[in-house]
Amino acid sequence: MDMNRTYRGKWRGAVLAVLLTAGTLTAAAPGARAEGARTETPVKSTSPVTGVTESTVRVKVPLPESAGPHPEACDWLSYLRYRSADGPAASADADRILIAQPGILEGAGAFDSVARNTVTRAAEQGQHIEFWALDRRSNCLEDRTGIASGDQHTAVDYYYRGKQVGGRTFGGYTGNAQLGWMAKLGIEQTVRDQYDLLTAELPSQALRKRKVLCGGHSLGGVITGYFAAADFDGNRATTADAGYNQCAGYFALDTTVSTSLGDLSGSIPGDTNLPDIGLGYGVVQAGLDSGVLPRTLSAPVLLNPETMTLLGIAGLGALKDLDGEADLLGYLPRNLNIEATNRFLFAKDTAAFLSGSPSVRDFRLTNGAVLGALLDDNSVPLAFLQTSVGFFDGGPIADKSFPAANGGDAQPGLYGTAYKAIPDRPKGPLYTWRNYDRVGDADDPGYRSADGTPFTVAGEEVTDVRQLARSLAEQPLDFTEQYFPTKLVTDIELATSPQVKKLVVHPEGLKANPVLTVLAGEGLLAGRVPADLHPVVADGYQHLDVLTAAPVQNNGRPEPVSTSLAGFARTPR
Image (cartoon, rainbow, N blue to C red; front, side):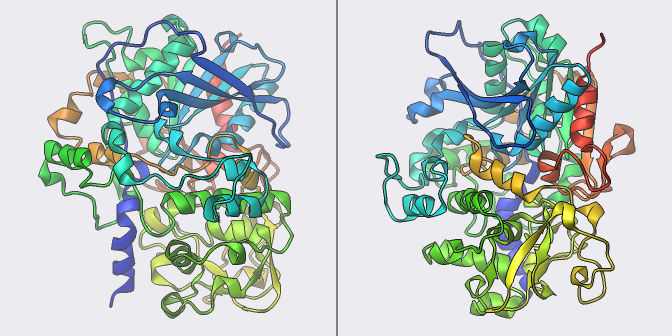
């Protein structure tokens, strides 16, 4: 059996959405904000990047009646607001406001490091800017009660054993039958949400046009393209409402600002279990409406609400005691989903995956090593979930030869280009995690694969594992996204249909403003972006590193993504 082909096809339905996207709208903007229709709550953070004030903002923007029954919480839009601690209190008085759309399976919390670093860099240049990290509306379904407890065991007991936290009991993960309203949550509603939020928070269109920079990461770059081309009042002749007239410029983080997949399609693997686009828009929409087609993107391994929650729980352990021996994997229940995910991530080869021996529970790992194994590019197989946070330490390391988890250069858009490694001594030493700034040169034999190729070197490690843990576990809005709307995928798959094409009302909007494109040197688009975009390339970075990288890199220089964003945001004095 061709295991590589089998497992590639199995997970492809989930991976397909890596950069898929979203568009425009024609409906009236909301009226004046009602009393109590906005809340802003300060966020306490242990980030070492000081001088930045963070808050969670919620604005009431009800879904249209056509959406059908839905939780009241889903009538609110949320974002994380970052600003200079000594800057103006009112957003309208900031020099610039960067508004960022998240990528696939990504929440507002993923922007924490790049937001803080960018605000800090701008302040060093005498500029007071804000960074707004958006949450998709569907994140209203997430329950962070267990993770917010700050304790791993409490979180596991809450999500898996029915134990209460603060008088609340976890209601379980929302099933497809309860998600009928998400059948309409596609391109049109996504960009409408951004427009409605902007007009509610910054009522002056002239101010938005002068101060707002619109952009995003991964999927968020293409959403920005559709936003730029959108028309929001139903009258093409009036352009004050056009998407491009809400922005002074655009920024793209390991993506491009576009309404077409173009070069992004190279990151999508071969087979798909999504509906054949030959069915047509109407048939696909009917499938979503009826529930015959799943309304959220999910797969039995890595990409589902349960495993997305596990990343936050793993972050808790690393945040509390990075170098302490982990007991998370033994404390978790042994259900099918967790077992399959553990085998997929930790199997050395196909035999180990099929037999379950040795199990990840047979290894001694620190909390830092558990988190690194879940998200580091030398371990996790899916490129759009990869960061460069260091490397295993404390014992012998082996090549991971399990074909579904190590595609090497064959499909860099799916697997990334890093060699995959795994601890090689069950029931042996305590495997620790060497943070990004402790990784040395390639002459260390512990960093070499079986064929002599270095697993990693200092220049390819850029993210602090402690700060990654903090972003996963400490943020009030999730780093990951548990309920990603399938309609965002099907809309882009059907981008040539009349129902989607009609949303691109102002295609000239994509070139109406300056664009900053920042790419991860080893990310999803490595070597496949047209030179005429003149991108800034962050060497050694993986896809998530453009959001999570430490403020000072191993070469002693400031982090390039936030430095570029701050420079792009700079206003004349």
